[in-house]
Image (cartoon, rainbow, N blue to C red; front, top):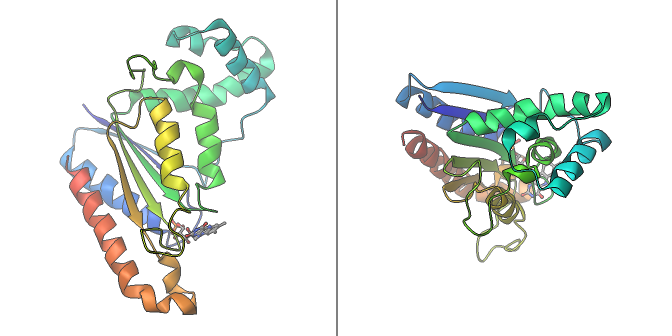
Length: 223
Ligand SMILES: Cc1cc2nc3c(=O)[nH]c(=O)nc-3n(C[C@H](O)[C@H](O)[C@H](O)COP(=O)(O)O)c2cc1C
């Protein structure tokens, strides 16, 4: 039975990234009525920032070259490490158990929201890194869909072309853990044309971009 892990990270009522990820999730759940659906709202229930205790565990795993996931699960040594690892390990188990990972991500300052980054910093640990020789790792083979919304536009010919650090960043970070082989981005652009007067002229473009992202969510959700 397939499992979908769905994360959202926008705190905004009326969030566009949530609408796109929601469309994907709804389609996926209709397509896979027997599947398991796991939802995590990183804005409503933020993951605490990575702390000294987790970094101590991470350093030990790196120093000892630990790849075995059972050993990783048991890697905390002190009460502080155990408390921090008790936050992190269930998040990693959610990732390991998922066949499809759906990430709802608003663009903030050309990258991701800090609620998303806090989750990412906890879960991307050394034993999950893909073997550079084979490109394979414990997370290989999973499908990843990123539902993103951004106030502006970043395509060729736009004034901010080249300013999208979100997609390349996610490609690099997800690729490090073998999650970039089946990776789809569904971007809705120009969402600020709703409330910024100088962008009103781009409302049609925004509507088309949103409709295309929703279409993509339905198409990929059916797969
Ligand atoms: C803190 C903050 C930073 C933002 N930075 C950018 C940015 O760098 N580029 C951009 O195009 N839009 C930016 N925006 C606009 C959001 O990307 C836009 O509102 C988007 O729709 C947010 O996703 P959501 O609708 O899912 O909340 C920013 C918004 C906020 C609140």
